[in-house]
Length: 233
View (cartoon, rainbow, N blue to C red):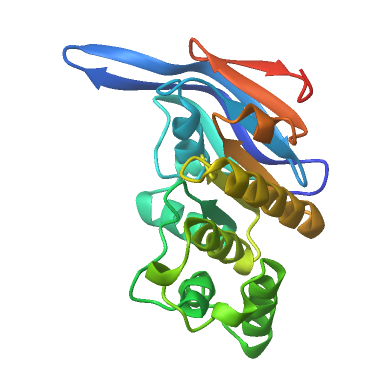
């Protein structure tokens, strides 16, 4: 794992192209990115600009067309698919737009799942995970199933789940995109507050400029490149 002076996540001269018909379309063009421990980085851009592509590259779901992706000091670009899967399982937490909770598992079981998959489920980590549910205001819903929860409650569970296995980095893809304005504001405050308190690194792809203002850095993706702006501009 990286020291405090080393980036937690990096894109080194990364290009990512997709085949469209008989042509290649470059979504990212030789981009550079270094994210350090404890940073909150916001990615802005129109639909199709490459925000989700950046998250997929940083998590090892996708590979760059050229360049190198590094996570925790290790090169994802040099790993095989199984190695990338294990890296993602152990060191990445995800918060999705549509929550992605498993409907046949209770709230508690959903939150504990990353710990089970990583082989980290102990009495201590179970209690810590349940403390996270209390932190997001759902200590009394442990035995409930996702289908009886509101959208905001499901996203609260998703935030607790993303933090449960003590990941190196959290990746959030439009975390408020499926919520009404009032609930989105509550979830934004909860997500950013939880990450700040835990000292975690968070990278968010979002359309929300309100959410973006809470980041340490804002990167707008334009024509395949990053344009860095102040979070207050």
